[in-house]
Length: 147
Image 1: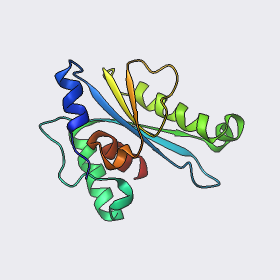
Image 2: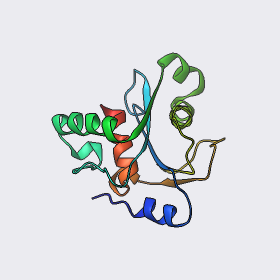
Image 3: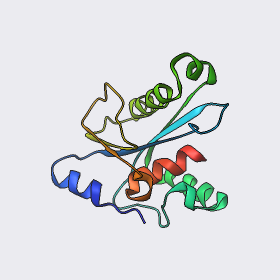
């Protein structure tokens, strides 16, 4: 189960706005890639956050609605034409970067699901392989992106 330890460690070091980022749509052969950036309020974390792949569609939808109500959320879609032009990896990284840029408040640190960070992040970042299963902010982004 994901927990809030990554965020807690970063906040203790002075990062007041920690954001989780994840994307969906890299596996299918057609369609957009979608990325979400989510900044959780430590006092209002919804119960049941987990890797979106481990949740039922109904629970994902309920949690996504709750996240929209209690967290700062940004969602970005990259169209198939851009994917075809730059390749799926670059499109996914661009979607993540744009999702971070779409937040109302600039983050102090970004936690990204996967092995690499997008270039030109506006702040420090940490790539966490399988982060959606270990980090609550990334799990939240995973849910929002999938819904």
